[in-house]
Length: 311
Image (tube, rainbow, N blue to C red):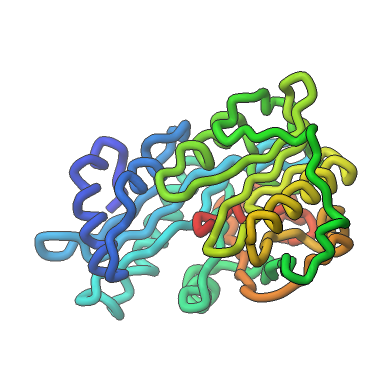
């Protein structure tokens, strides 16, 4: 069955119970409401299978607007699948996926994409009709090995963790990317109930031209969203973050940076190297005529850690 917004309050408690049973840990308070309801999306894409007095399984997707060469496309990011241990091996995941994808297409969603983990990847490709777009390596910089004198703090770099500045003039390079509206950025990072993010910006006259969002993870820092207007501004932000992270005793910086994008070369010059973990990135077209040719070519994409629900 497809869950709509009207049925959400009654289903939330059962979904929290299913998460606990499926993964052996409780989901963070407020996460489900934040992800599926407390946002500016009109659509909700959630498929449920009931079993006994509770839920046997669920599969969901999150509506995401993509932009490519100045045009916008409706898509959805595949989210967590959950199956009660007593109902595993009964084909519920492919069943729910079929229902969810049909509903998404009915709502005009052109494609579903996401980042299957190692255990679910065979099912996505073998049973759900997904195609691999790329295997994304992590780029990492070991801060203990750098010459800190080669990096500098810059007074032009400001912090805007609440996204209160003007983000209406962000850079665009014509690649496929998640459309980062001010409302989306505030929802994704400032209002996230699970993670704390730090946002470093260059904002002449209060208008943001470049930004990098970071998140501490243990003794490392993830650069989850790198958006630079040009190599000079991007290098200035990255140098500032390397310097401040080194001074704070952090061990490593990690990020995603497509090899076909200028930011990859810039990071390599700073000492970043490709390493593990490697993340599957794949998709399935839902409406054949709704996307131009080339949409499944990774060289047409600019994907960041923040586009995933993991980081």
